[in-house]
Image: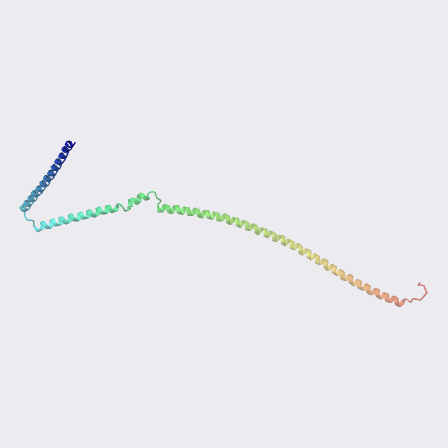
Length: 208
């Protein structure tokens, strides 16, 4: 329906025109107010008396102080901003409040090391005592064997001495027997020769 669509179109165009007109009026009003303010300021400055050198110097000093304070405030703001990413003492205190202090850590380490040394010494003492006991036992056994061997050697020495005495005695008896046998043989030979010389055999003659 063409008739129905024409009415909203006219209304929209009318609203746009009204908005442009309102904006133009607002800008003109602001410009007019600005010009009036400039004129008033110019009249006021014309009516003000001229300032002396001391006033100008004081104003300059005040301006410098203000600029210095502003610069200082700006530096402080920058420092605060930069500190946001930096760890400070309070942060460290918060982080380390649950950690062990250095002195406490030294005490703990000393205690642990002392306990370890005591345990090591105890273990070494036990091992050394065991080794010493074994060595002493072996030495005692060797000493007992040595004493047994010494006793056995003494018995053997006595037996050897006895055997030597018997051998010496038997040797002397053998020498005596040999000498006596030799003498008996010599005597028998002599008697036989003597008998042959003194005994005359006669044929067919009986012996008395």
